Length: 227
Image (cartoon, rainbow, N blue to C red; front, side, top):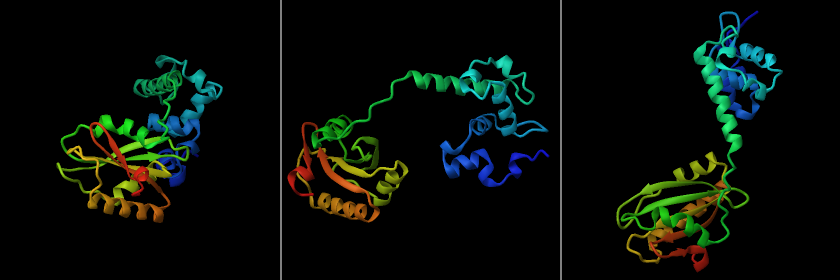
């Protein structure tokens, strides 16, 4: 008996399953079902996609060779759904053609400076950024946490670590610029670093360094022994 997807258990619905369990847990037919959105009167989107895949020997490469006209021969697939499938598979093909981007590898404070100086080194106001790193000490994400005036900015610990958890970062590097050009840590810089470092110890996220950046140079708290 046909049961509409919206009556399935939440864990079995493709969209909800992806959100709850992650994209890798979905079958090819479930991923395709998310793309087309709905099936027909007598068939769910997942069942329809299973039928389409079966006709392509359950091979996505073969499926990608079907034209819009060929896809619309399947009952329940109109032109809009066919175009969506073709576009998604074409994106997958293009992705395979592109070289994987090599993540920046942090080997020294100078490397952090080289990454961040073009972003904040010449700004007329202060900004606070965080580099998020994986177990291999490669930068998986960088994010502006706050933006302030000429003499300072306010940083929310929760934002720093919320992003760390979102990207599964194991360590972070704090960065901010001094528009004045002075490579000297203020009392507020030291207090902020201590506060974030303590939070990181509690949350099991290592704070590797705090680096002050100007147009022509930088100060690494770790290198200077003030970390």
